[in-house]
Amino acid sequence: NNWSSLRSIQLACAEVLFESDSNLLVTSGTASGKTEAAFFPIISMMASDMPKSIGALYIAPLKSLINDQFLRLDEILDECEIPVFHWHGDVAASHKNKLLKNPKGILQITPESLESMLMNRPNDIVRLFCDLRFIVIDEIHILTGTDRGNQIICQLNRISRIIGSDVRRIGLSAT
Image (cartoon, rainbow, N blue to C red):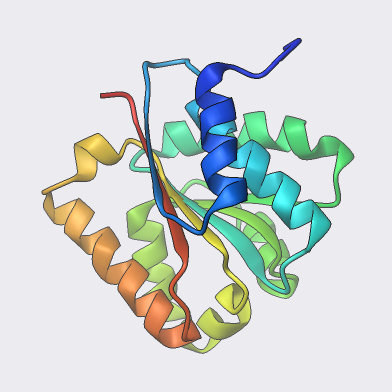
């Protein structure tokens, strides 16, 4: 990514994220920089005030999307002290164990893996998410009004109830 400047969608998102506490829905065409629009401000805020747990949760409906975004964010964060973890059925247990031992940074996960985490690791949820500040939901347009989308809403409500905090939400949509 050899950008000389930010795109207008990225500047608009940064303004909302830096200057308000509002949730945000980012709608823009495919490959327009939506993911960066959400994550550049998140990374900046996390770098200046590192969360005591996972600080940002990225939920995507497809393993392939998570894998792609993991590689992109991992490259961006290579110079920072903010780790990024991906978690789904094809990710090695050793990678997951690194996050479980030292929960911080950004977690990228499918709805099904998040459900499994909530069901199978209930005693870890507070430790993993006690200082969660952002939830980014990618491809929100294909989840809205579906059983899977409703599942995510329930998961987020459970996490908020367990940690005692409403977390800022950012939806990304190509339509």
